[in-house]
Image 1 (tube, one colour):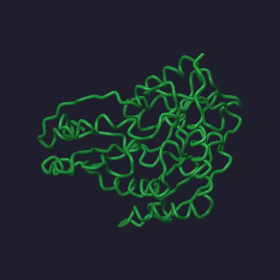
Image 2 (tube, rainbow, N blue to C red):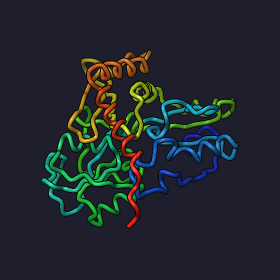
Image 3 (tube, rainbow, N blue to C red):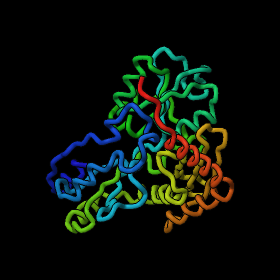
Length: 302
């Protein structure tokens, strides 16, 4: 990001943050809530002019812009797939070859549901923390394998840790996964003009379809929803999506060619098709489960 702006003659100062989602590591994300876990502090400082723009992982952002702020640019997308990382000593080269009972770490309900659907014989365990922390826990033997975003590993030059990439449409990442969003104040005309030069049109087209689908399904980190856009010889740009129950026993999949001049409408149409085909019942069950658990008093600490 800084290099891209420097190439345009813009001097930058990097301000780093440790967000709520980074600090709370003893609970799954879905148990904390889904409002601004990785974005609230940055957006607050944008509004008070402490910073001029904020850089986010797009999948961490709500599908609607907060008042007064805009996603003004999307950088060229990194690999949107999930990756399987296996610790040394585990004889596996893919998800299919993991031994029965293998402990696989993830903090994502979407990944949990897909693991349970595809490999119900695996032991899925919770895994929180940044990429370095997750890999350390894996290497210490707290689990045997982990599912992480390929983009994060590759950006940190840790691509060599990837055992196997989990390919769409059989396995779907989060809507917007692998894309970096640049956010700014809606009234900062000069900054908006500069940042718009960073926008990657192909990335915006793809994630517009994925995030419109997510919005129409009213999804978030508490709902197992996956999406991916793929270039296919027969259909061109194709949107694939799935909704799943938490236990992975019910998984509904669908696909639709993306209308290139109206990608968001394609996302909304696929969402309508999924809801009509049974997705509404699956999602209602997921939300009822979340409500039940949030209403249950916590057990005293031992």
